[in-house]
Each structure stands twice: as C-alpha cells, then as structure tokens.
Length: 438
Image: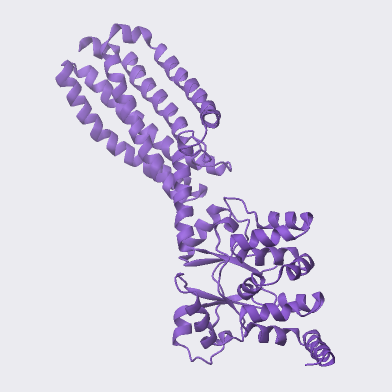
C-alpha cells in the first residue's frame, strides 16, 4: 500500500470514528485486544479517546494492558480521571504500576487517590473485573465472554451503556437458556441494589443480608459501573464486623490486630482500663457503705461474689442477644421497649429459679433462713436489673449515634456489680433482724 493509500485509509477511519463513534466502538470490541490496541494507536488522541471511552469497562481494561507506552502517555491524561481510574483499577497490579509510572506525577497522584478506597468501604471490597456487555450484545456473545472467565464464580452479567453507566443485570441461567441471537436488552432486569464506592462495610453487609444478594454492583456518582462486591467479600466483611464488635465490647480498638505493636495496643487499651478502674472503685464504694453490716455478718462477704456473678451472667446474655439483633438489623432504637420488656421478663423468671436454688444451698450451708431469704430476694432484683441493663446499654448507644458495641461490657459490669452489691447488702441491712434471728 502506498503512502497516499495509507493516508486515505487513515482519514477514512478517522471520519468513521468522528461521525459514528458508537458503531466504531462496537466493531472494535469484536476484534482481539491486541488488534484493538493497534487500531487505537493508529488514531490521533481525540479519535482514540472517543473510541476508548465507548468500550465496555472490561474490554477497555484488556485493551489498555496491551497499548504501547507512548499511547498510554497520551491517552490516560486526556481521559476523565474517574473513568481512567476505574479502567486502571481493572488491570493487573503490575500493569497498573507500570502505566502510572509513565504519567506526569500530578496525574498519577490524582488517579492513585481515586483508586485508594478506605479499607472499610465498598470500593475496597469490590472486584473490578465484573463482566460487562452492551444492551445490543447477544446471548451467544455473552456465553463466549463467560467461557473466557472460567475459574471465577459468576452469577450475573452486567449491561452498561457505551459511557459505562449501569443499565441492569442478566442472570447466567437466563443467558444459558436464551436463543443465542437474543439481545441482552430483552433479558436485562434492574439491579436490586447498588452502592457508591465510599459506602461503609456495614452498609454492604446490610444490603446483602436484607436483599439476599449474590453480588452487589458498585457505581460512581454518575452511575458508571466500577466493580462488584461478591459473596466471598461479603462473608469476609461480615466476619470482620463481628470480630470488631467482639473487640470493642471489651474496650479494644477495632483497628488492633494480634500482631499490632506494643505501644499501639497500650494506647488503645489503657484509657478503657482506666475507666474500668474508676467503675471498680464505684462498686467498692458501694460495698464500703455497708462495712458495719459485713463486719456484723461475715457470711455476707462470702456470698457477695455469687450475687454479682449471677447478675453479670444475666446481663451478658441480654447484651449478647441485643447486640446480635442490632448487628443483623433485626431491631432498631424504636424497639427499645419490646426488647427490654422481654429481657426483664426473662431475667425475672430465671431469677426466681436461681433464687430458689441459691436459697436452698445457702440454707444447707448456713442453716439461716434469714440469710437464705435475703440472698434469694437480692438475686431476683439484681438479675432483673442486669437484664434491663444488658438490653438498654447497646440500644442507648445506637440511639446516640455511637457504636453499640463500644465497651458495652464495661458499662454493663459496672451496673451489675453496683446493683448486685447494693441490693444484697442493702436488703441485708434492712432485714438485719432476720439475719440475727438466723
């Protein structure tokens, strides 16, 4: 081909791209990624950009990985930064690092910031390799794309406009049972949920749990598909949230790990230990109020840990059930009365049963009916108070906009100890005559 002929062919190609960029992009998608890359490299930046931005996100990433370095230097800085970052995020890490190293520092820094999602966000959990097709693609073409993705668990194919905006999803079984010539626009259905990449891990867990999703698409503010959160990532996020709740309930930061530095762990734990010490002094102060009663009836000192221990266990049970309900979004702050009244009734009935057992044991040990009555009555009171506290504390924290797991057990221990000691020693003081009569 002569130089004039090559020039004419190039001009004809640029005229086609300029007038019919969508049609040209569809033709380009039918080529192999290597061929598409060579064709893009042959065009000037404006025409190459018009073509590249109309490719589906998956194809665009495959083509980008095969472009020459000079084409990448010219193309990526000219793209919309959000679109460029989304395409780069789909590439393998080594390709991504190589291309970012070719760009001007300011452009590379902007793209890195757009790709750097918080570890607690949907953007961090998402897989950018979602399979995307145009609405006019056929079921047969979708099957070809699915076969090329062997080894990945795929439930849906996502249908997007040429600019990357999410149209809907097509289930794999619908593609498999459709006529190969059926267009996806006939099979597509709206997505049941979608999130922004900045959505929190808790929001992702909520949507998966409430909507019974297999996958959750992640889109930018303009509705362009960035990736998808898969079931495995959801399970990992749920486990992470549950483990974080376990730590925060006892005053340990959710950021601390088993191999965290010593000083970091000390900084995270020490304030809560100091608070726990203050609450322990409060419980001791309550005991000190009844020093004369304890000196008079030394058996009370022996039995105090029993009352505190049973009320603590009762409160911990109520706390665990309430925390689980809040974590799974089964209950909200408006359910406070229903939850607390249920826990109070449960604690009262359990308290009666435990009080009878305890009173019988104390009577056998001390032969004092007065002491048996005092500990039985205080057991019921302290266990009811513990059940009420175990349900109230996490719901109150949630209503105040705080993490309901944040050191709930420390506050609960304070309540159960104070109420347990106060009820036991207070009743013993009021009914000292019964104890003396023994």
